[in-house]
Length: 133
Image 1 (cartoon, rainbow, N blue to C red):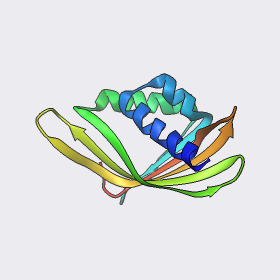
Image 2: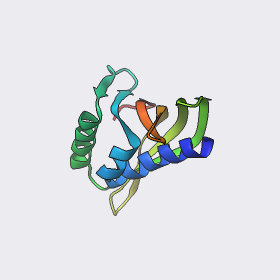
Image 3: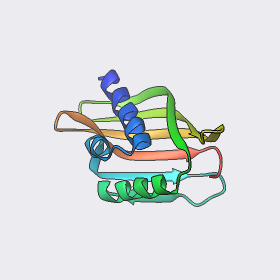
């Protein structure tokens, strides 16, 4: 079960970076909510519902320059039962412009996952960044 949870958050990061909408649809719950917090800023969100989250992701990709990667590390399952789980992971977000590689941000993800049709899906995502974007 632990490996399945880690796989779900890794699938999310890969799909996010590749703008792989079918994979994002598979890993996000229909009623997913996202909330982002940056130091000294008002929280962004929650963005509620898979459709709204996908629109948010598409807008972010449109605004990007270079190739962005979300590197998840120190992935820890903090709670789990048969139907729900919480997973925490560090974020290191990078951008490759072709001329340089930049660190964009660091932070901590907290994923709330829920079993649905035999798969773990992200029902809640909270991202607390260490810096302002």
